Image 1 (cartoon, rainbow, N blue to C red):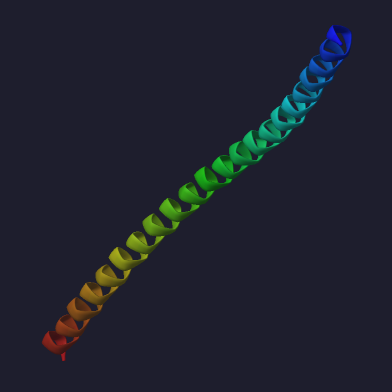
Image 2 (cartoon, rainbow, N blue to C red):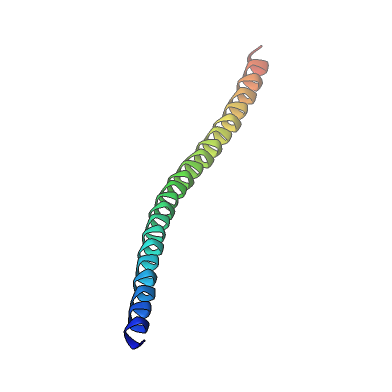
Length: 80
């Protein structure tokens, strides 16, 4: 009876070890996926920041063009 109990406990311990290994493998895969997602998010954040900067630059340029057009119109009126 004692020997059977030891075998049963060993079988349970082995199954727990196998289950732990499977869980650890899945957790490692999830960590890798999260790391990849984090890198993608960082890249996307850089792209977003670049787009914001471009938008801001275009807005400044458009305002400058409008100012220059007004100045040209005023000069044309003065010379006409």
